[in-house]
Length: 258
Image 1 (cartoon, rainbow, N blue to C red):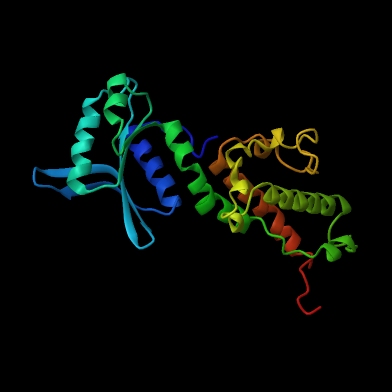
Image 2 (cartoon, rainbow, N blue to C red):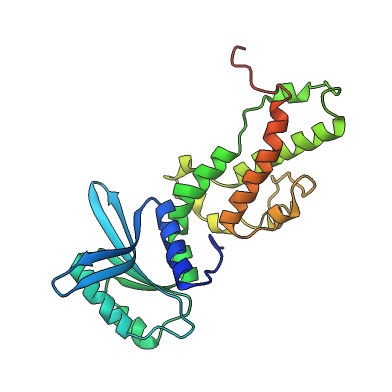
């Protein structure tokens, strides 16, 4: 499971962390400066959300390192947390952490996370607040199944192209059904495996899921093989942008007057 690719610099690690937190619903600032009694403090990523009318503040220190992070960085961050009154602090690293760092963070409000750990920790919040709403807004079911069934104007469009458009359209609807909608966010059983929904090619085997009716015939290989959730969204949107305008020309809309 991944939301974003691995960052290629400290700056990009900051930007990726900020992007995920913002898409989770936080108000985010990069390289925010606080005044303290000792000196000015610059935070790599500062994020704040309102929970039941209470502010919840987190700070993130981003370490784009090859070597494991020593404990002195944990000690320094503990001071910062106290000075600015953060609820939680994260050190997010592209490497790992020395044993002393792990011991120093125990029984504190500081968590030590690799880049992969960070994505996993915030994945459900990111899915509910960003991925699912966007996916279900991109994929539409605005076309009338009866109009599709009885369409016969093959002077307007060839049979083969019509079959391709409709086949792809129904595949997209099936994909939307594959990902739980945020309408069910209060039912935890709907979200037990949301980090295991990709790649689609592994889910399209009838032996795994009997009600999965799709094949790869209408879907690009690059889409059904995608493991990155954000890239998957981009590829879904590109596919709908090529399909829906063509279907719009065929007057297949649901008739609200009927």
